[in-house]
Structure formats: C-alpha cells, structure tokens
View 1 (cartoon, rainbow, N blue to C red):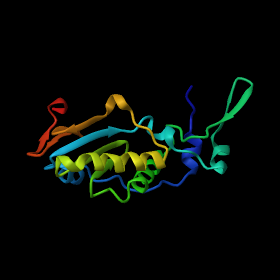
View 2: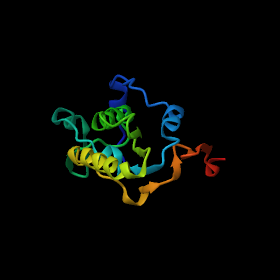
View 3: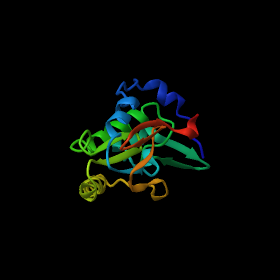
Length: 164
C-alpha cells in the first residue's frame, strides 16, 4: 500500500535541520583501531508519532479508516526528523566514540580494549530509545569497513571501489 502525502507535504514548512557533512564524518572515523558498523532497522518506522500528528496520517483502505502511529516513508521532513532524533539518542557519544548519518552508525575505538565498552554504551542508548538494528547489515570489531561511500581504516580513507 502506498499513501500519497503530496497535500500534507505542501502544507508543512520545510525543516531545514542539516544532515552531517559526509567528508567530516569520514575524516573523524579514519585512524581508529576498531570499528563497528551499525544500520538502523526500518529507520522511520521506529519513530512514534505524536497523538495530534496521527490524525494527520489518516487514510482510507476499502471501507475502513486507518492512521499511522509511526512515521511513514514519504513525508517531506522525515529525514530531518530522524536525524534530529538520532542526534539526541547519541548526544553524549557523537564525536567521542560514534558518528551517525541518518540510519548509518559507526562506533570507533582508538584501542581494541575500549571497543566492548563503546558498544555497550551504544546498545544502552539504543535500548533506552527503543530502537532496533538490522543485524544483517551490522559488522562488529572490524579493522576497516565501508562507511558513506568510503572505505575507512586505521591507515586512513579510500574511495569505496564498489562506488567507482
């Protein structure tokens, strides 16, 4: 089922919350000894709508009326809303041991012995926010990996050969 949110999107002012700068994020994560790459499961569908906003998400299917209780895909400000949420969830970690770009997260540790603690902190924050990961897209304690179109490692940054 696909809902057309064109009218609702036209009525909503654009949220100008910026996405993080990809190049800066990639520079921040390069040079770390251990990295874990995480991906949020169905990102927007993990965001609860306020009760007042659920009414705006009403739609008909056959003879029944339904409304979304979670944020659907297709809303103009969904990306900005999700980025704000994820920045609040990880506010004490961003710049320290995690970088986040929408649903892509990378946990970084300068030393291998710190990585388990950094992962535990991340999982605690995810649990508090009731957010889930896609286990098929997560890799843990890697020395290098793909992040936002680049390959990052302790040695530095390379262009992802899959993107060339």
